[in-house]
Image (cartoon, rainbow, N blue to C red; front, side, top):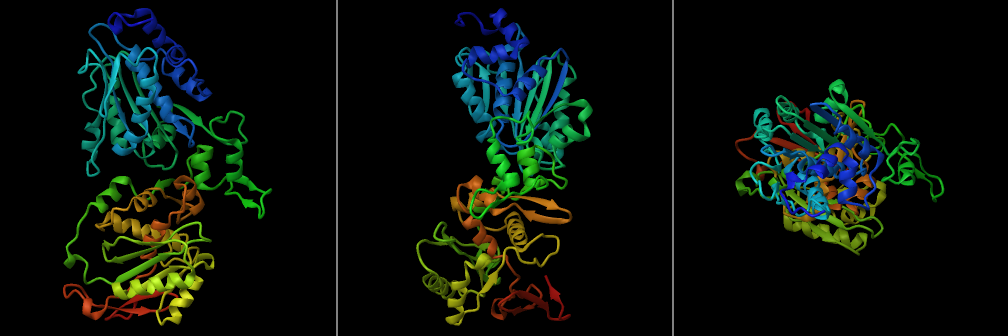
Length: 504
C-alpha cells in the first residue's frame, strides 16, 4: 500500500494500527521480534481507557528506548482523524541524554519504517507530519539546570489535543514536577498516554514515585535480567549476569561476584530499587560548564599547589599526572611505557616547575611503590594513597569514595577544568550508592566495563583531593584566616592557629 491520499484517510490500516500495536510493528519492520515485555507494554497502551499511565522499571540493556520510540511513532501514525491530530512530547533526565538515546532511537525507527518513513519528518527538535507541521508532532523538550519546579513543569505545556502523549526516558532522576504537569494532558483527552522508563537507581524521582508510591495509579512493568528468573529479558546475556552476581570459579584465580545485595546489581541487573539508591556523581552539563569556565589568577593563586598521580597498572593503562591550585585544574601530563624510576623523574620535574606543595600518589595494591620510593630517594615527600583506606570523613565507605566525592563537589562549586575528552568521560561515568549510612563510589571494574578503559584521568584528578594541604605563608590571602599545615608521608591535615585543633 502506498500513501497516495492524505495519511489520516488510510482508515483501515490506521484503525488496525490503533487497535493492534503488533500489526503496526510487523507492517513497518517485518523482521523485528519484540521482547515479551515490549509486547505487554504496547498492548497495555491500547487498552480501552481514556487515560493511561505506564511505568517501565527496568534493568540495563533491555531496549527501553526502543520500546518508547516505537510506541511514540505508533501514536503519531495511528491517532488522528480529520481536524484532530496527536501531539506528543519527549523528555529525559537531561537534554543531552534525550538527544543521544531516545531521540536518536526515534530517528532510527522512523528511517526504517516501511509505511511511516515518507509521512513524517525528523529534526533535532521535532518529528512532524509533513503536511501538518504545527498541529501533528512529537517534540523534544528539556529544562535548564537552574530551572525551579514551576519552570520544569512548563516543559510539557502546549499539548492540547484529544490524543496527547508524553514519553519520559531515564525517568529515575526526572523531577516530580515534570510528571505532575504531564498529568494535565489527561484532563480533557479522548485517549492519552504517559509512559516512563528508567533504571531503578534512586528513590527520589519520577520512576520511584510511579512504581512504588503511586503504584495504584500506574501500570508497572518490571523488567529483569536476573539469571534465575525464567521471565528474564533475553537481550541481556544470562552468563554475564550470573558472573556479575556469583562470580566465575573456572578462572584462575576465581572471579568473585558482587552478590544479589549489591546496589549496582540490584539496579542494573535485577531491576530493583536498592535500599539507598544509586546515582550519577556528575552530570555532563556540570562537567561541560566547568570545562568552559575561566578564572582570574587572583581567584586561586593564594591556594596550595597539588599534584595527583595515577600510576598505570602493568602497562595496560596510562599514568596520568594532574596539577591543581584551588579551583584551577591544569591540563594533565600523560605517560605510557615508562618504569617507576622514569615516572618519578617526570613527577619530580613537574613538581619543580609547578612549585608543588604536595604530591599524592596512588599506592593501592603497591603499584605506586617504586615511584614513591624513588621520589623519596630524590628528597621529595610524596604521600601514598590507599583507595581502600580509611576516609577522613566517616560518611564515606573508603578513601576512594571520599576523594571522588570531594572532586565532584569542587566541579559543581566553580572549578575550571581543562577540556580533555578522556577526563569528561571519566567524570560523568561513575555512579554512587549507599550501604547503610556509608556512601560508596561504584567499583572501578564496573566503570571500566562501561568506559572500555580504566578511568585514569578521573582517578588522577580525584587524587588531588586525597588530603587537605596547608597554605604557605607567602601565598596567604590576607582576607582569609591563616591556617598552617602539618604534613606527613601518611597524611596531611590543617591546624587552626588559635585552637590547635585539626580542621578537616
